[in-house]
Image (cartoon, rainbow, N blue to C red; front, side, top):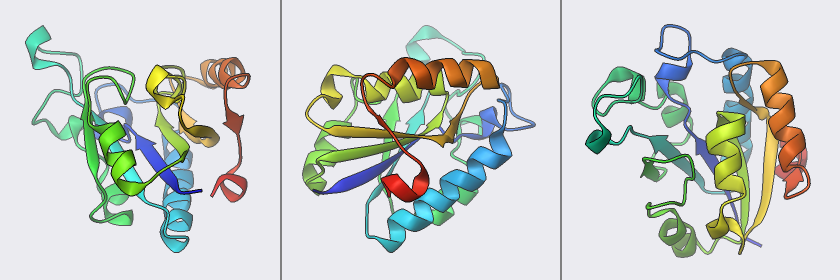
Length: 171
């Protein structure tokens, strides 16, 4: 079974100094980099998903196109050079994007998800109608959100719909 690691919204605005810093970002970043390293070692493709605020809706509080805050963390890009970047304007990484096409082109059957924010973009992508053909695993230690409680609630909520695993189990 061909796997892909989806790295969702590891963007500057979610880190200290950004417009919407989240809880536990440095530890999450370290874990995501470990996951990418394992994926690279096992020749599992890494796909970056980047949220850009919908310009038709006007200026958003963060992730505005062309801003440093909307950029993917440089360390993440450096860890997976040449990996595809899928741009999205909604929480679901599949909705009105080319993600399915990218996955089909790689022959992917299993998705491994990590990223930000657990209760929003990560879970919406994981339980998307478009994700149903795939086996989906989320790595909670590679996800974060505004605080620990919301992260735990979100992980518990999706636990009935997909697999949860640690880095070493999932990759």
